[in-house]
Amino acid sequence: MNNIRRLCSGLSSKLDRFSYRNYSHNSVSGSFLTHGIHVFQCPDAIGIVAKLSDCIASNGGNILAADVFVPQNKGLFYSRTDFVFDHVKWPRPQMEDDFLKISKNFNAVRSILRVPALDPKYKIAVLASNQDHCLIDSLHGWQDGRLPVDITCVISNHDRGPESEVIRFLQRQNIPFHYLRTTTENKREEDILKLVQNTDFLVLARYMQILSSAFIRSYGKDIINIHHCLLPSFRGVDAGPIIEQMVERVSHRDDLQSFVQKSENLEKQCLSMAVRSYCELRVLPYEEKSTVVF
Image (cartoon, helix red, strand yellow):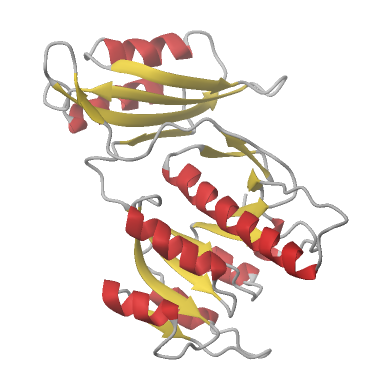
């Protein structure tokens, strides 16, 4: 399965979300609790939910939300669990070992644990072309904490003047900007790969270049792209599974300008929600071109 995650602003999808921000509170006894997330994928079997719940409860944790998906006639099991725990009483290494035992018992394909307050934020690079609405929204989302990521750099095939909003913002925040002029013969993919080696995933904020299958294989990690439903699908990134969708009502009173504004607003919201979902471990691959989105 390729590692591409695609967005489409054509259909409506609404998800209840537990905030990714560092979650902690005092329990009745006054102990400090930390928010954890665990996702699990394995062949379907009896007792998986019971084992996962007992693992958390027996170590003093409390489940806040649990989602399970068992596709019909596929023999597969998916789950995502939000819980709180005392990281002094249940240290992170012990937690890893406890979930690893369950993973081995059920021959798990995927068992991922994340503690947002303790773990490093995901490192991302943002690629953009000449339209800045998604890029600017992503930068502001990073600044105000809506996007729980660290932006390592911004890469663009269009240069920007020193007085542009993007350049001024990046300079204030010490985020490198790389202008890579592309041509039909040279998409600068080798240069991009060098710049994004230490990232966890990429975000294409209206990057209007088609990344080759060779680039996708070489990068080897996930890529989140925004894709307007009015456009046809393309090979590569745009062929990936959809992880977030939004829709906007239009009427006979709309003109070209209002269509553009509505489209840009949808794209900004959709991309932001998709990045958050990914960081909150809400997105799991399902078959070749589909995803489970909790």
